[in-house]
Image (cartoon, rainbow, N blue to C red; front, side, top):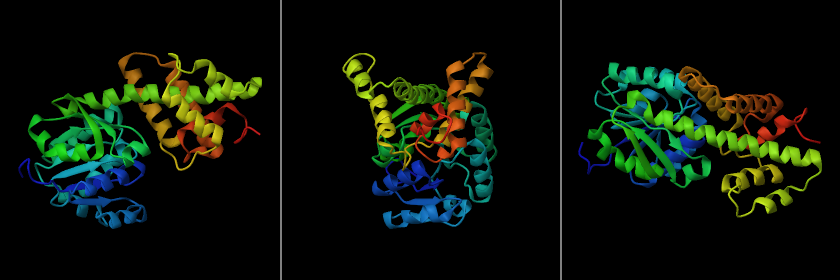
Length: 298
């Protein structure tokens, strides 16, 4: 196909992020097929012009671009193996799942075995940016396919940051882990600040007044604090269980790099405690509850 054609896109995985991306791709006029292990989660996309398929192989057959947005790298590998019989050599594979550094190499090896052009392309952003088509795409892959991918990335994101020519090197995934480490640390710290304020009888508003407009103030702190103070943990923008998974990917990558990340390890454990208390499917701001013995602070 040429750069002026509209690529047919197969979206594998229609959770919080994948469903929003599929809708925006269809809204941009691209032919879109979507598959999800639990088909009922994908069915609502049909009213948005997305063709929902019963199998991953059916979704990828004849597609110009395959976009994977699943839970983790192992799941991606399993799904791509299921679709292998229908994959066409030369297809552009946009791997957007946060899979970490180790799994990215295995996924790239699968791409080579099947003649796919591999693009390491995680995204930065959660539910609202995904729904609004305002994600930041971090991408690494061959120059030759970038014109074809331009309408895909433009439909799901407001910005594309190219980090390299070889997706197998995982430069985009490495940058994503660095960015996520900051996001998760801020989220965990926000919960601890509010838990400490409660324990000390401090009105949280006095803390926000204290930092307002200064270098310690930030929009993300305000956003996550609002969820905690209002008790609005659903629908999740980014679930506790997914946050824990990403935190473990970060600490694992750090270990292989020979550095110790005490805060990242503690953050992963906070998410795990919150999930064990029953908050796994709630927004990651619910890590707040990990500061208390019970599920709630009452």
